[in-house]
View 1 (cartoon, one colour):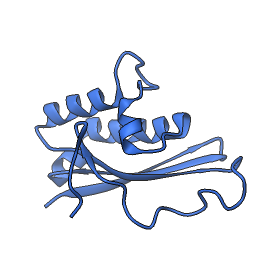
View 2: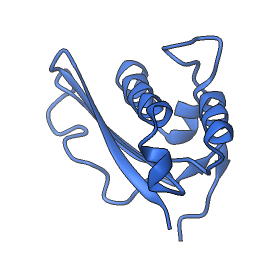
View 3: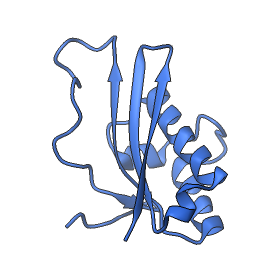
View 4: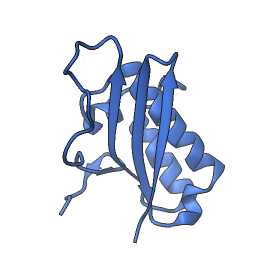
Length: 121
């Protein structure tokens, strides 16, 4: 069984992000490290507008450009000794034309674990 959280982030009330991240246990999701990671991922999505989870993971972190988002995920998973997944996200931007990205995707994006694709059965 996995524990999932949804982190939100608003940038100047013009860009909004919801990101769903899972771990193996509730314990992991309550740690400061997990909460910080979730917040940083939401900020990353707001700042860099990735078009997929794969693209997100390849990006240099906006918090620490020396480290990719995938590496941050790997470090957190190792520290907490849990499998951690970025399950899905949605990003809204008031500067987008009307009708573009106005609702969350109908089906979740494929989950990725430490840079490897996980079958979403």
